Length: 111
Image 1: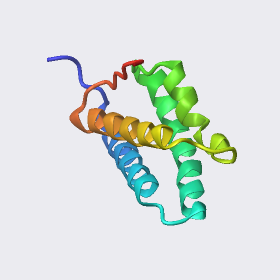
Image 2: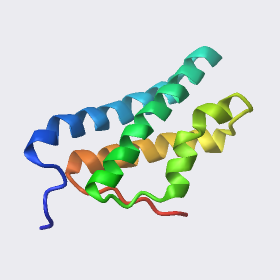
Image 3: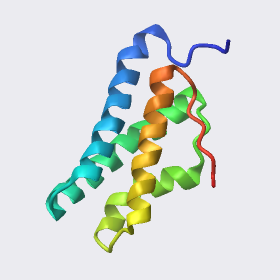
Image 4: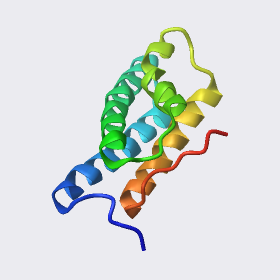
C-alpha cells in the first residue's frame, strides 16, 4: 500500500472537498434554469481553486489542462458551453471526489 494521501488533521478538509465536488456535479446535472446553472459553474470554479491548492500541496497528478478547463468553466458559461463540456465537468468532479474519498491521489487522463 502507498502512503496515506492526507495527514490526520486534513481528513475533514478532504471529505468536505469531495462532498463539494459531488454536490456541484449534481447541481450542474440537475439545474432547472440558467441562473442555477451559472451559479453552479461559479461554485465549481471556487471548488477547483481548492483542488488546485490541494494538488500542489499533496503532489496530485492533475494536468494543467484539466485545471484550466475546470477553473475557466464559469467564464465560458457566459459565452456558451457545449453539452459535452458540461458532461466532462461533471465526470471529472465525480472522478476526483471518488479518488479523494478512497484516499488515492487523483490521476486524470488527458484523453
